[in-house]
Image 1 (tube, rainbow, N blue to C red):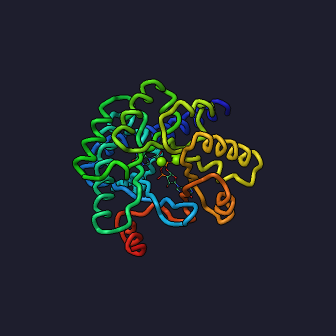
Image 2 (image 1 turned 120 degrees about the vertical axis):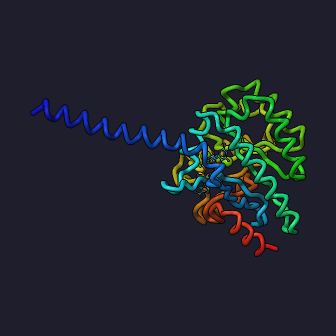
Image 3 (image 1 turned 180 degrees about the horizontal axis):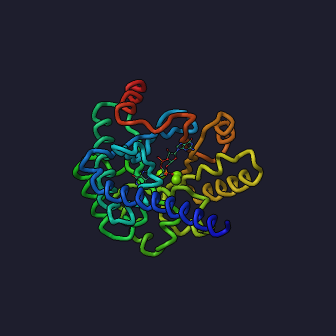
Length: 277
Ligand code: C2E
Ligand code: MG
Ligand code: MG
Ligand code: MG
């Protein structure tokens, strides 16, 4: 009996693994075609000023609608794009399209807001990103002051000296730089001081667990530091009025989360802007 069980167990695992591997392979193959097949799009999530309650920014978030599998989250496909060498191409596509759109909305007469675009760690490995950003700004005619590039804490820490050089050059172009998902990485708080950045985006895990004393303590420590370093602070993942109220009194300039709006497709974001006009 134990032999049979062993056999079944083996089969069970092997089938599961096979499914996992083939889904993964399929995503790898299909992602190569996704751009051409027009399956990628960009959604925009409003970012709100904590004082005035007005929209002051929007974050570009990549979406993949797979023809057979439906919605695939960026958390799943961005790492795949990185591994198979597609992130550069996809990242450039996002940057160019989002900058075009931001400029287009400004030209439509909507109040200008800052555009935030996420960069992968791999895009920061190469100085070419500086020229690339510069070219896209020139091509799209978006003024650099309206663009903020978001990079994660871990992508800086992996290759600190090199990344610092690149960030300095990016800021010389006139764009600003934000550290995304701050607080969950491995960097010590004091290493922040040496980074040429403008903005800290506090990771949503801290906002989501504010009722827990430890989150409150950590968040307060981060906000104190940000204030000393005169960084702009954005809190992500605000879902409840309670979290909103808590942050109202804090050193926190901007707010982002489902409480204000989900990320919206181009058309819906356009409608959203129209109502603000
Ligand atoms: P992120 O840059 O930290 O983006 C914020 C994520 O939080 C988004 O997830 C957004 O939909 C989600 N979010 C916003 N408000 C709330 C809220 O109130 N509650 C909760 N639970 N979540 C909220 P999304 O769109 O699934 O993106 C996940 C991550 O994928 C992003 O995290 C970013 O790291 C990456 N990503 C997305 N687009 C791009 C891109 O164009 N390039 C690169 N390199 N990475 C991207
Ligand atoms: Mg981000
Ligand atoms: Mg984040
Ligand atoms: Mg994140």
